[in-house]
Image 1 (cartoon, helix red, strand yellow):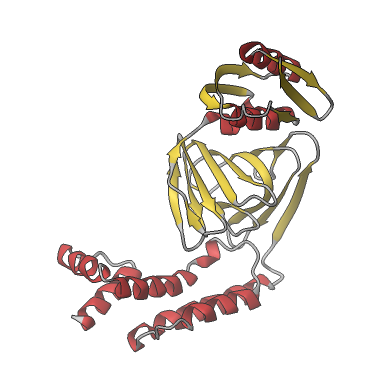
Image 2 (cartoon, helix red, strand yellow):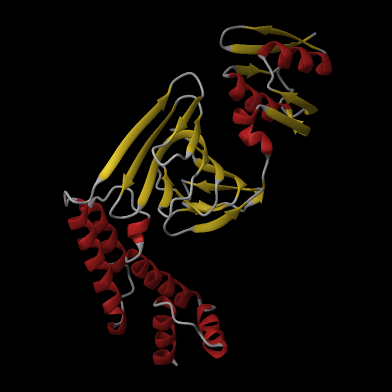
Length: 316
């Protein structure tokens, strides 16, 4: 059984089509926790050979350390799988050599938004709306047919299809590979989660070890502390209202209303003590601070004051 199962795993990793019986044998073998752990290690090593499409900046030392950590776990790779490790090491070395070869032309463009939302057209004609206090670096590597973006902050992307891969990365090594067209990524400095909202098409989202396809009308989060994906949910259009200006609240806690509209208005919204969990229903279209404050104050029977940086509500 052991020889047979490893033959099945080798066939699966190399892209072979498993028969129904082989798939059943593999599924049964994976139900044993120790076997599942061993399989995860083998997949991790094999995935190194395909990592080139997702790597944004090649760090030779980091790649080598990553490889050593995977192969130095408590379980030793069986001889029949040593070719997988060798292939991964060879690919990592080739990537490192290729990265420093002058012929691998890479064009780099950097965009920074300060205290206002910026509309950007990338060199490939893709459109990006960059939220306040955000930074985006765009690189195009002609040899690798890769358009890579490093994002710190929040941005809405409308990607133009050119035949080249388009990948958005963040500081926490959470990646969004474009399989569709319009999506929003939120990854500000200090956030414990990276948020994704897909408006059109679909994308592949997550880390190298934990990722999934997220489709139109869905949203997903990646927990950077736990290094795992959270369950996919239905898209909350208020998450992208910083760009569209259209807010719809149906029984939402006031704390969430304050946070989302406050981000759009670039002001801190201060609520009366003990009212954070009160529910609010209403609609706003491109609200100003004055309109938002007046509507909420009237509905909740509150007073308000507006300063340059805050909207402060108080009980009457």
